Amino acid sequence: MQRILQRALNESGIGDEQLLGVLYLLAYIHESPAKHAEAKTYYERVFAVDIQFRDVGDRLNAVDKATK
Image (cartoon, rainbow, N blue to C red):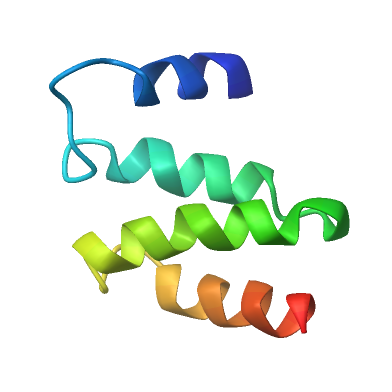
């Protein structure tokens, strides 16, 4: 699944606005302790486009706290 989502990010001409769900799922997949920094990066991209997308604010806060 992760490989498919990564391929979607590499499609030309598609911006973060169209990829919100993909970015969110990639962040969710990377929520393991070893990959919190990657999850945070994806959640930040979602947050920058739509701060009300699902529970992105809560998840970003949780991942941010876990990386400190």
